Length: 300
Image 1 (cartoon, rainbow, N blue to C red):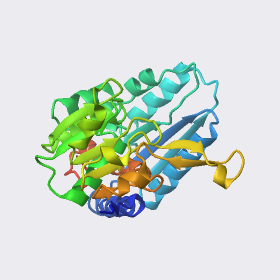
Image 2: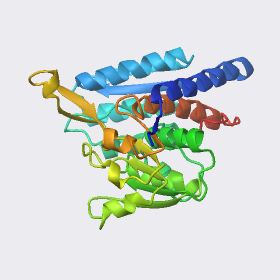
Image 3: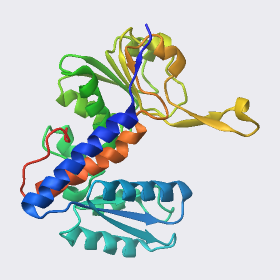
């Protein structure tokens, strides 16, 4: 058996298309243009690329893009004042502060300052608590994208055995909660899990989000399972020349592909879904804030 490779770029394009269609309807029917504000503190090159790409994707979907670039030495009070201003701005429906931030700033405090209704990254304690209690919430972008891809690939997820490798607040925990909502039987595996290989082998769905390159070999995978690899790791690539690197996931793609039924590649798998779901969350937030029906197919 050779797994079907799931094309994250193509699926992300489908999500963005749905977002753009809903934005068009909102503007035509309600004169409402969803707005996303992104705040960048400092000059981290990777963060600058992410922010630029988010702005481009936002505008391409017909939404308002607001970008604030602050110096690396910006005091916490000034950043909080900007967040308060965006919280109060009726034309802004989603707020994202690009992480990492300089050491003198607290990511936890920043997230807690954002209005949970505009927390389109789904990182606040409020949104995490709503998710855990089964209530309407704003789901984290990467887990939401994984869930959408799983639904599109497998259909009804009810009754499937799922293993999430990793217990981070960003991916592992919300991913497990989303799978529970879809009536999967869910196990969270981590560094202290006894016989993790045997735990993974029984899973119909494997979501790897642990941050260890090629940790999951093919002989951990149940034949026909759907493998979602969230990991993005750089490893040496001497075949490309001295000092060169390449991107790999948390799953050993070559061996897992020989066993799994479906598998995401790295790069080109989960990565593109994150920005697409950020846009989806922004449209959802705009609808909720204005008391309108939520967009179908874009929420958990």
